[in-house]
Length: 430
Ligand code: RM4
Ligand code: MN
Ligand code: MN
Image (cartoon, rainbow, N blue to C red; front, side, top):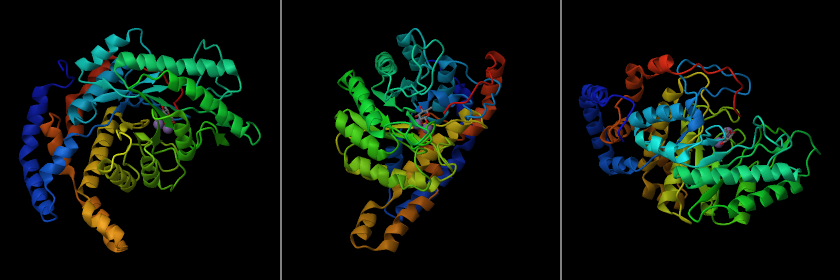
């Protein structure tokens, strides 16, 4: 890492002003956790191993299906997106990888892009293919679907694009491909529901065959949108059945926004893990649908319960459990760097709280059907303010004690507003 975006002098003096207060809070928390026989330093060491990838598309003001409201200084290409992601990682220290999206992040020299990212202290996570929209000059339209299209030429083109993404990913040092398709239908009778899935599986088999030995493919389900009557991979059931058909390199990816309201997502996580098929996560939050709001902003309790299952999964790994944790958000009304900083902190906090659950007490209470004690065991962890642990781990890794304050003080966005070109209004993304 030779070219970190924010001045390290600035970062150090920022931390120096806040360190004493943090130490006091950390020591107070040490004492209160010790009364529960929890060693705060062990929890902090565990958190230090944790990381979550940033979505390259999350560094811009993504917009909705209705509108996009650009801000001055937002990134206009993958190079600028990487620079912004590097700011998030430098301050938060838990977002060392970026998940790129193609063709949005297309460049002509991928080894050079990889080197550029490494200079900024970043690597690449799962590559995302995009066959949910047409791009200028494309030969076959995805209007009637992509991997499940009735048109073989469109299917072949979509398969080719996914294989190209694998090639790009190899050059970038990635080891996974995430496939989310918008394929589905808007009218009853529009599509043969069984045949569409058969075509999807056939296409995926060809993509699967192109995966290098140490790669995985993540199948991402989503209930609806852009198709509003049926979606080919609508739910975790379709996803796991497809992954089981394809083979061990195929895993399921859970995007928190891709379920019906009130669905028990933590149970889905547990189920996928039971069958060794939990591959990855897209963190975000939502109130109604695929809102792509900031992680933990609407339902932090759900985020905690999801992490509670992930900690259970860590303790009982199956089929090489190695989940790819990624953020997938769209920032319409905030500075995307601020949203990603805030989300990274919320995710780290939810994980830390899940680490505080007294597992033996929980399991004992579950075995004995002691409902209230089981519930209270989770509650005790959830109620704990873990801010000092998250901040201390971050500082020890070289990050900032108050990430948002330092980001604002650094004047990064204002400086970029002077340097970067103005982005267009454009349309939003899904
Ligand atoms: C989809 C899905 C995908 C993401 C696109 C932009 O709804 O969440 O993961 O790549 O949006
Ligand atoms: Mn997603
Ligand atoms: Mn989504």
